[in-house]
Length: 444
Image 1: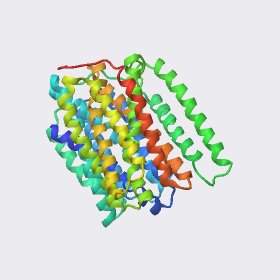
Image 2: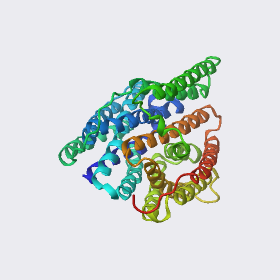
Image 3: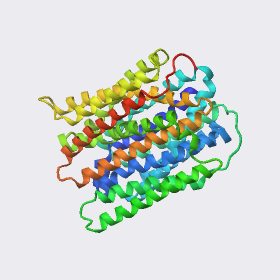
Image 4: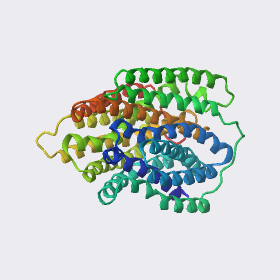
């Protein structure tokens, strides 16, 4: 059972990191800008954000196994269609649906693991979280090799046979979980949340699009107003709806409020970094696609090493020290990325810098995951979905702003270097916030 759910998470992780290596190739092949090519990453995150809180509730209502199987089937089908897409608009729509399927994986899988391991779920979930770095090792290598011998379409098509095998294995091995009370799906809340995210993304993209004349700022302003209005309606909606997509009590208060902000800041740096490093290596230093994608392998290795340490220290040290050290190390790695290579080969310098960021992420990720669950241990799926939602929101903000700024820049390489330095400052803001979280040591 554990191996099957880990394989599902691995497939999702491989897809995210391998697509990140293909941005430049995809941009050239479809004749679009870097900002719109970046939508293939950010719109996937939007789908994930919308799906995570919904999938958490549906997992409790209909059972983790059933949600897991539906997510596998939808992810596999959209992977096939993405590989056959004829234009950037079609690909963006398909990636939104694929992100919805991918976002349903994490709450369902976490719930399956938590149900199976009971009181030892803290270690099981921490070990389960370490699957992401393994996918981050395989994904860039797969993406680089596929781009070298074939093209960006095959990066999506490779998911199809894996998804079919995973569906069969999950149907046989995963046990059904107990079901909770039924609740009405909050479709209005889902629509408003999607409007906030998509409106904000579109506003940023149009604001950074050169050559649009007066239409660019006007369209960007209209989209920003739409996003802001949808945000106000969303907050009003979750206060009135009996079963909102995002429970209001998980948003407010000194503990959940701080935890949500920490997850947003973590997502800005961590997800933005993973998406943009290959492109940065190509445009600033002229590194080839295979070597540029391979840089993310060093990030993943750092994450695996540090995650192993974090799992071992979690019960003894608690959440806060691991979060604090992890964020500081992550910020240091981002600064190294921004600094020009000092007399060494760019590939070596970038590999070291990316590896340092991986160490920081590996320390912080398991600690932040268990810190959120400790705040409401009886609502595992809902808390997991909310945590993922805020991390993905941060990633959308980081990627959208950076791709728009780089697209509008006359010198993209140094501009993207500055963006990494800004990301480092963002991470450091999370350090004092992490110190305010309630501590937990020992067993649950």
